[in-house]
Image 1: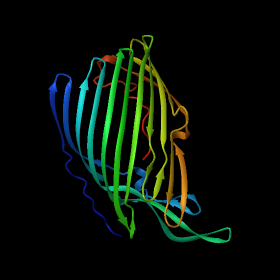
Image 2: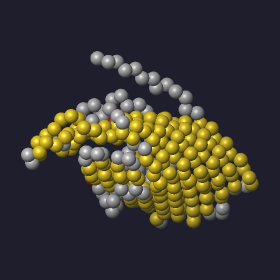
Image 3: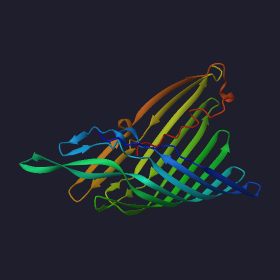
Image 4: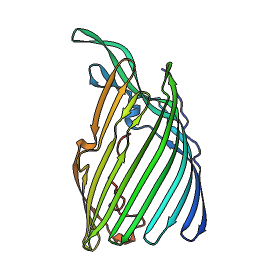
Length: 294
C-alpha cells in the first residue's frame, strides 16, 4: 500500500490599507492569500452510479486550492446611500476541476456495447480572474434598507490532463438584491434575490441560476425569544443545470437544494441576555438566502 504524506501548514497573510481623501470618501488597497478545501464528496473514493453507463467517484488525494488576490476599492458615503466599487485580480493554483474519462468497462445497451464513463475531481489547472464589483446600500429609515451588488469578471482557466487541454476563457457576471423592511414595530421582513449568469468551460456549460428567498422575524418575551419563518427558493428556480461533454459523450444534469421550495420555522431563546447585548447581528439579520452548491 502506497502511503501519501500531505502538509497543510502554511501562511495566509492579509493586508488592508485605507486612505481617506476627505470625510466620507475613502480609497482602499488590499491583498490576501486564501485556501479552499475540497468538499466531503470530492474525496469520497466509493463510486456512486447515476446510470449503468455513468458513475461519480471522489478523489481522496485531491489537494486544496490556493489563491492570491489584490483589490483596489473606492467608497463614498452620502446622507442615505453608501456606494462601494472595486477592481480585483485573483490567481489560484490547483483549481478543482471535474473531468470525465473512460473506465475501460463496457455495458450492453440495446445490443450495443457502451463505455462506462467516470466523473471525478482533480487539481487540474490555474485560474486567473480579473473583475469589477459594485455594492450599494440605501437606508431610507430605520424601517427600510436596500442592499444591492453586481460583479463582472473574466475567468481564464489553463490546464492539461492525459493529453487533453482544458483551457477556457469565460466572461460572466452575478448580482443580488436584498430588501429589509420592518412591519409595524416588532416584525421584520427580509427578501433576497440572486442571479448567476451562465458559465462555460472546455468540458461543461453551466446554465444561469436564480435564487429567491424571504423571511419574517418577530421578537417575543421581552426580546428573549426570536421566531423566524423562512421560505427558500420561492419560485423554484434555484437549480443547478449543467451540460458535460467530451469526445465520447454528452450529458445533462439538473438538481436543486432540498428539492425546490421549502419552509423553515426557527425559534431562538436567549438566556440572561437581551437581543441588543449580543456582539454580532441576529441570525435573521445575516440571512440572505444562501448560495448553495459548487
